[in-house]
Image 1 (tube, rainbow, N blue to C red):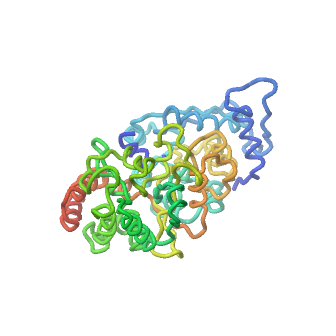
Image 2: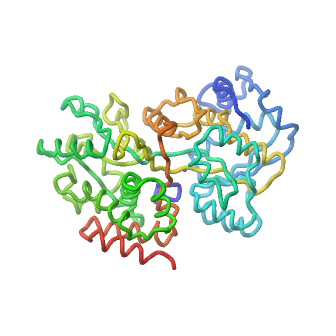
Image 3: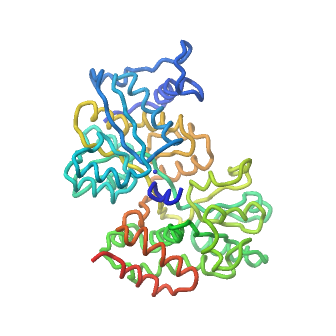
Length: 451
């Protein structure tokens, strides 16, 4: 689920220690980021001298990230503003994805847009008004991100946008206490995951709980399941072809991926723990779907890292807590496919102050400042100091993102045409849960693909 999927609900290198110094300056050394008292730490501006004299300049930023998440972004910009003299004008809009296209086509684009999907990025580049990223930004991305991330910011062989934040979807939530009490081990392969599920089912308990109800977006959790299985069974290259429709949606590979998800989601012995039978998945909201773990009527729930914020107040989310998550394993221990989402910083102007700010956002300095003033935000930036993360789930996500063996792929439905990714894919997935065959489901989605 991306920012769109709030769907009813995103060559300057500096030492980590400097990032912390700047972060403290940005947030006044405490929770009040607007502290301007004489005791507030001063920002070390030496790292910004290369940008030259930019006093009096303004850079506009347009995004779908709104209150309350916007404050951490504006706080993370303060060291740049203080040290360069540039004013960053931040505008958040829930209708961003529609409005940014309108503005770009009309020649009224912002200086920087924080873009949540590669598909939208390509559409914005196609307007002819986006600017290629400066060489300094490209150098930072080469240093701090993997090739897969750089590819998502590249259109027609030209590099436009550095990655920003990232989220992980390939997670399974569980009860650490239940695992300890029963001697269950965190599975390292899909076969071990199924074996664990069988073991829990043999005890008389349905191991999995799930829910896909989400208003007009009902069905989207199934798309994540299928995408995760597409990656695991067929690999990233085939996944990319599937997303781009270079192979049809009803290909054998696609059908096999949905059937693999069905080994759990359509298995009466496995679901729906604490909630009902297989069909109850369609009427259970995604917000409620994992909660049976807390009362012991369910053991496993596949959902993204954002679900950490969904547990009731006072729930301890940690490796030794009430709930935690583990990586949804691949076919073997040598492969580590990761499904997720993220944002990219795309520029529509190439003035010196815009280039300077775009470069700042591509550094490890900014990533460490941002994480120091945020909760629930991580980045795939390899210069991110994970010790700054306070949430155990964020630490897990950062560890997975920075794993050299990880192969990251963006949420497929977010990159497919709207008629498919946010319409037919959701609706047909819901029909599949309630009894429609895999063949009929993938055939119907293929028929919805724009000609």
